[in-house]
Amino acid sequence: MIRRFRARAPGHRWLKVGPGQDCAILDWPGGRDLAFKIDQVVEGTHFVLDGREAASPFEVGCKAMAKACSDIAATGFWPVAATAAVNLRRGTDENVALGVYEGLIAVCKRFSFALAGGDVSTSRNGLSVVVSMLGEGPKGGAWLRKGAKPGDVLLVTGTLGGSWLTGKHLDFLPRLEEARLIRAKLGASVHACIDITDGLSRDLRHICEESRCGAVVFEDRIPLANSTIFLQNWKQCEARTSASRKNCSYVRHSPKVKYDKNMASTYMALADGEDFELLLVVEPKAAEKLVRYWRHPVPLTRIGFIRDRKEGCILISRDGTRNAMPKVGYEHRV
View 1: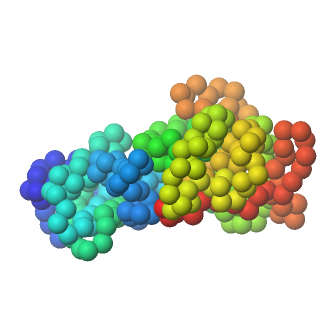
View 2: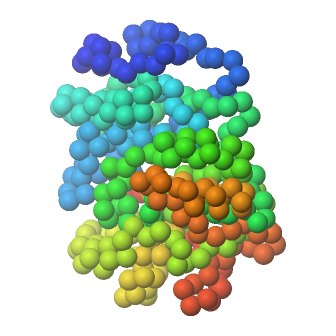
View 3: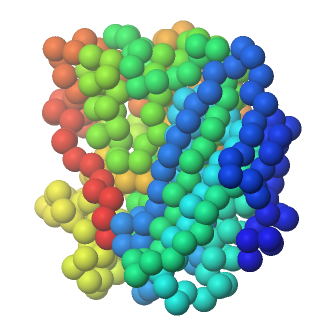
């Protein structure tokens, strides 16, 4: 199995020594910054292998690698090489390991970076995959959570909400290509960025805390995945086990809104996790120009703006009501 893994591991022009040695060796060019990321997916926390929400081994591998890529995308960088450590439950069929591996290399090949090595082990615990990833970008050019300024515009890629209900959390593309395009067009006009994995509300607060600022979000501008998803899936959600329903943020935080499909969908966007979209803070004129000429298939939406810290974070509802941004977010557990 390991020989097969080594033979098919994707490479990269900077990878001098890959799988088969104690360490991978990379020839890192001067004048480029290095991003380093480590992430994991764990059975029972980030996916399940049984029941109607079960992930395939291939989907587990894809999610593990794409999840790390999403954080690299949030820096505006591009992945160069990754390593993966897979822990299998003792007695697991070899096909599970092969399926996970196929998922890992599928993402590597999709974005043309190397699988530089890894490790496989077994234990009494469930399946888990840990991915370490190296990315590269221009010297001093990494997008961070800090850097947002009053007056800056909030932009978001794609649509938000319902990731667990629709299965998007197992089948998504990290926004690497979109980030690269935005960097090419805007340069230093992106002042901050984060990938949305804990819900729009919580991840926006991460930016505000690091940047020491406040923010305004307009409810009617939030790009919702599908305002009918909530009602279509409500009966299914009610029929699930209590443990599974913990993933439905609107069940945990606001059961009273379940009959208003618009508010329910908004709540899903604010509180649900694992959308893997980018929330960007951009200089106003640059943001206006970018949105006007954006032609990429993945939508880019202006949802609000940054303001002074003492004014806090607020959500302006469809009827114009101004309320404090709900302090909600996704808890990574099944």
